[in-house]
Image 1 (cartoon, rainbow, N blue to C red):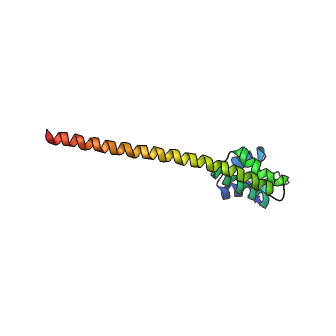
Image 2: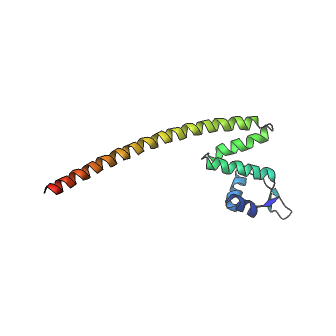
Image 3: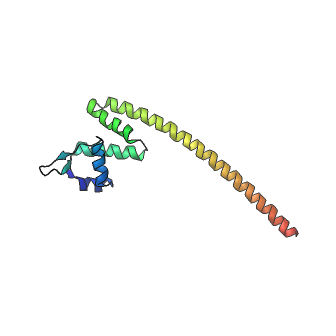
Amino acid sequence: MKTIREVAREFDVTARTLRYYEEIGLLTPARTETNQRQYNKKEIAKLKLITRGKRYNFSLEEIKEMVLLFDIDRTGKKQLTRTIEYGENKIKVIDARILELQEIKAEIAALAELFEERIRDIEKEEDNS
């Protein structure tokens, strides 16, 4: 069992973030007699999924659905199926963004070439003056 301070440090989040995850139902840490939060292995595993989901830019609602599906289906099949669906959708968004960035890169490169050509023309005019 780990305290909120230990878990916050381990995952590089604030205690406030952990309390928020608890408030929205993502985490359910145990409580001591003095009402201090205690995080067991299951809660740590959930937090690993949450941080991975955030890293992959999933919304908290998507993360919550994926995390809580394991409680509904202990085999993990539903959780894995839904995670694959979300992942496939995320890949489509990433692919579209990559294409957009490649187009922007090509436009910037074309403009840079055009501007370099203009600079050469200006320099030729200066040399002829």
